[in-house]
Amino acid sequence: MGYHLNFTLIWRNFDKLAYGLVTSLELAIFSIALGIAIGLSLAVIYVGGGRVSRSLIGMYVEFVRNVPLLLLVYLVFYGLPTAIDVAYDATTSFVATLSVYSGAYLVEVFRSGLDAVPRGLIDAGKAIGLNPFQRLVHVRIPAMLRITLPALSNTFISLFKDTSVASVIAVPELTYGAQWINFNTFRIVEIYLVVTAMYLFAGYSILLGLRRVERWYGVER
Image 1 (cartoon, helix red, strand yellow):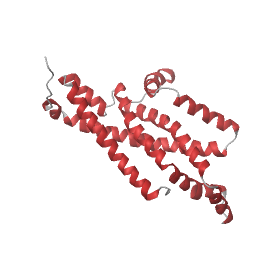
Image 2 (cartoon, one colour):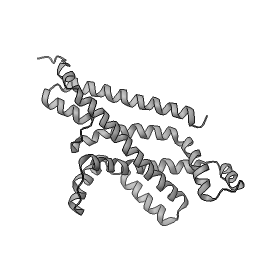
Image 3 (cartoon, one colour):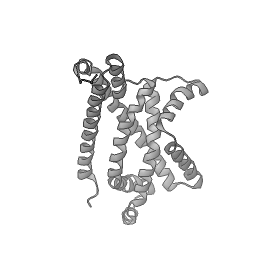
Image 4 (cartoon, one colour):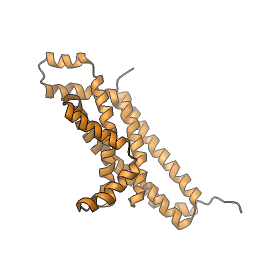
């Protein structure tokens, strides 16, 4: 028997996909914001700190980069509550996990960006009397952000796609909505065709927005 495409049941349940897409975007936004805070803080400590702080940050980065995100999600959601007797919902657990995960990658992006800031800019800050903190805030970080914008764009797109992993702990994002419709309608081809198109549209829209930011604020080449 041939398989005949029928999208009727998909459109009847499209509200679950729309809600899931909004949830995926919210997860990405909160996780990226927290990841930026983690990554930037640790990158500044790494660049200006001593051997001990660099070693600890390096261990964190290598641990996260070499452990699958799916395993980290399971460890935080199932392992930590058992080990230290804490309670949190699935959404909070996933945002915390993705934030820590993204922070490890952003540490390297920001660290390389800080190292790439021209020495002349830092010397100019010294020449006008800026103290080390003022040079960091007004000279190094703004210059670093302009240098790292292309790498940040790629990281942000990747993290948006990683929100699909939240479906394994029943966070109602886009992939979870697709799985629900599939289990209740058995229209596997149709649902994943629609969801693929939604991910493509959302990802490409994010990319276009970030490219505009790059052209407006980034370093001209």
